[in-house]
Amino acid sequence: MAGQSVVGEAGRRGSDVRSDCWVAVEEVGSGGIQLELTSKVDGLFGQAIRQGIHETLGAFACEHLVVRVEDQGALPWVIQARLETALHRGGIEPLGDPRPPARPPHRPNGTPKDRLRRSRLYLPGNEPKFAVNAGLHLPDGVILDLEDSVHPGEKDAARLMVRNALRCVDFGQAERMVRINQGDLGLEDLDLVVPEMPEMILIPKVETSGQVKQVQARIDAIQEDQGSDHPIWLMPILESAQGVENAVHIALASPSVAALTIGLEDYTADLGVVKTPEGFESLWARSRLVNAARAAGVQAIDSVYGDVADEAGLLAWCKRSRAMGFQGMGCIHPRQIRIIHDGFAPGEEELQKALRIVAAFEEAEAKGLGVVSLGTKMIDRPVVLRAQKLVGQAREAGLFGDHGEEGEVTP
Image (cartoon, rainbow, N blue to C red; front, side, top):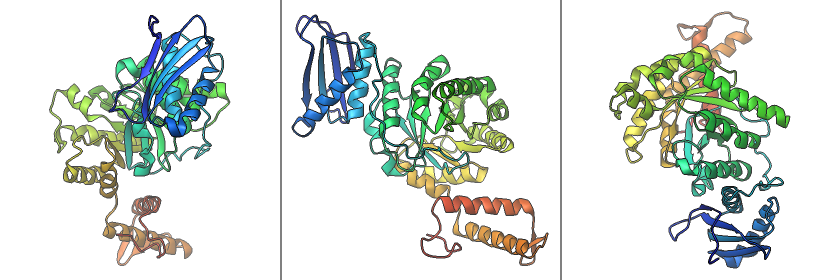
């Protein structure tokens, strides 16, 4: 490779890298495709890696090329994304479809609009090592992030990595979410990720309903071109005073909006106040978001708790958040997931009371009675509806015993 200029490179190299690789490509005058591979798993998977690289190159207009790959245990879809990024950066465009084979969709019909969303785990879009086993931590959702966690110079690489992750990674029961970038860059993100059928798109720094409508229009256009009717829900993120003021209009901007959430780092910066573990400075904004979400008939989802080591503080935040009307929050580390699920779970006494109310309602219905009573108290219909919703969420969260009656609650 001496005397040649690298026309495109991508990825990471070095002994501290894991589940990733570095790729460099050079156009040369002759010699066909020349592959130089070093891999820590060459003895086991070297032949398959070489075959995958040649298959990807077959989709590009490159007759004479030197390809150098330094692999640190990357999966095939990761190597493919790095190679495609290097080729694009070198000005080599595909003639065909360079995407890796897609695994069968786990949920071909998508997710329900009101599904359980207690926890959503943020995964940096350009860090494949975090995506590989994310589903094993059992979050309700995983967010493949293209925005704040990605360096501006790596947006193109992250976009391809997220596209491939959506095609190839099994995230288990977790809802597959993508946080796109702001403005035109975010619309370009949609061009690559929407065809891979994510189940939710998070829209950052939303201040007006027009931003949501713009994203929805782009999704509609892509899906119309595909002939797809796969449901893709939207979760606008309010991160400024203006966004909070317009919360209800944002929530009503599209029927695809399933939830509202808030980004407290940017919101408190916009206010010029210090973000505290107690959250008193954002209490009004979070309350307004809950009220707007309820008025629009969508979920209210809280921000993240930034101190991973403060588990007691996180649990206290979750309990206050649930008491305010939030149905879940974000998390930045897998160790937060279990605590969040505990914090948003109803207490046994609360759940048992809800079960008694539901049972009393069903008994009254069976007898043709228009009035529901529990002991000596009359139960209003809104109380019944709240109890039914709580029981339904508890059932979805797996809080009932596997072998007992529905009235028996797991510890």
